[in-house]
Image 1 (cartoon, rainbow, N blue to C red):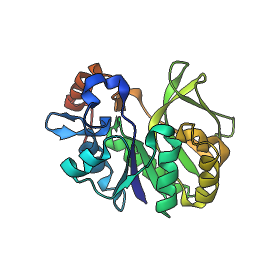
Image 2: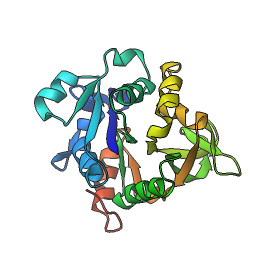
Image 3: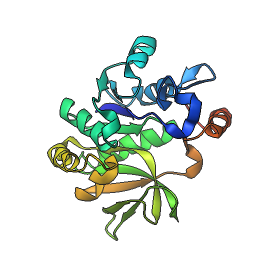
Length: 226
């Protein structure tokens, strides 16, 4: 399995913080989000790639990330194009993580363990339990198969999951048709199960105030972080 961090966008809601680098390369407490994510994934994958777009020249020069994939024309697409690039370049199971998400390392282990118990037959998508209608959400049917994703009432998408190599061709076909969509649009279109994770084991950095929230989250004794 390979790790893939999707970090091609600018992250405009962060204001001046992303004038020079994308969100994944914001530094706090001496480390970037990318460095924390890569360390988090290291023990579960055979290397981690990162999809870059905005300010990729600065990122490559300043941080020299492992296995960068540069998405040309990043500002013309949504992040479906980022996952498509990764799928086209990497013929393997992909553990996909948004570039602005941190997750307790126990949940990454549970994701990988669940995927292995299913022998790679299904994709998995991380979700936060509790119906809401303010963020992108995932819904599934009584059998546990994901049926819908988007700005809908459902369980919040947690920004990470696994796309099985068994469904790589179908995922590529779907994404090529939906470059203006968010990448989790692939999940309802192929066999996918949700993985519910506790809300307190997840944090997303979208706005400047979230940097302080992330510091507090990382410092909590209840969290295992990289």
